[in-house]
Length: 494
Image 1 (cartoon, rainbow, N blue to C red):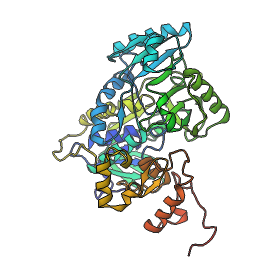
Image 2 (cartoon, rainbow, N blue to C red):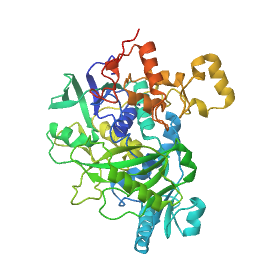
Image 3 (cartoon, rainbow, N blue to C red):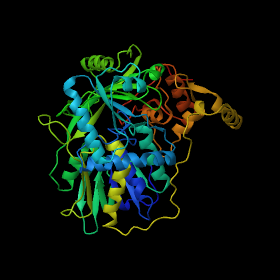
Image 4 (cartoon, helix red, strand yellow):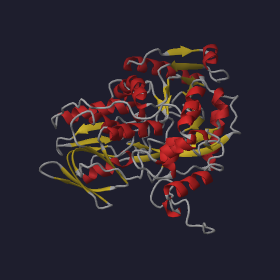
């Protein structure tokens, strides 16, 4: 857990360290404000923010004039420069939205018209020959091409926002679940299950799947979140060359998502998914056999040349839907400065395209804060995150040789599937936020993310954590308290 010397007195306190909460914290760190972030998990971005397709949406899917549409297009336009500053990979590879049947073709024209009304650039309806040039082997009658659709690593981006915010003085309190909010004359008193208390003038609810619960703690009973799970298949990197652009089916009205699609990641894998299924628990991240089979069939239907014999894992994410299952579809974002609870800024139902919208949401919330507090810009704000944009194996040979000359740990490969070195692992262990979970290492260094899924590198990682950093078996958590990797030793070391 990271706690700055400022203590628990803040001008602005953000509840929730997902991509939106971290973007808000970073934006506020441009000003002479005491800013804190409270997060119930042991790391940032452990919920919806890390468990999605990593797509930067163009803005074709949302009704003109809605917050979703406006913030989507604005956020998309901000991403390239932001990712340069944060040293995060980004690639605008475009998207084909494919009509597989005659009755779906009008949907493409409707999306094109809607996208153009939203200000989405370069939209084009393509026939099969045009589709084939962009994506060989794609199957369909027509497609809408949106060149401003891109891809990003969602957890790397979320972590980068948090680290840069922390670099600029934001205090992060991880593993702190908010259980009480009391309105005071000067603002709010916030308490956690772990018996910490925070005083703040402005309180910002960015709790995602739990945003309705946080609102209720503040006395606002207007909202209810319905968790909706989406499952994915992850394909081996060696299949990445099969996909040169994103391929989506034409959406069907009333569905909870945009349909099962093919997504290439910035690290070379292909994702197939997501499904959509309303569930009871916001933390039910299970994957299921029948959905996995459905993903395989629909993925091959979009791109028949694609084989799923190289599936290396599956995962699931959960969206915070505002509409119940009997209605489905999308509801506009709630981003409001409450007049009845002055000083409380409320964000509810920030699902897709929340990742794309996050920098634009941050500026919108910044302006809301400016109506409540004096905002003086800092001259010493550092927009660029420390570190490198590329992994060691992606660097030129000469640069790799120089680094090995400076530190031999650069030359020792720990994760053979992803070519991750000991030095990269050590930097992940020594991360600025002080995160100590196995998932934290995966998200920061990509260890255990290759074909073997940690089968070969995990024993070496455990050895380094034990011998060089003093970890005990009970210190190894997957991602949260209680998610123990080990219960003890089979044989005592010595």
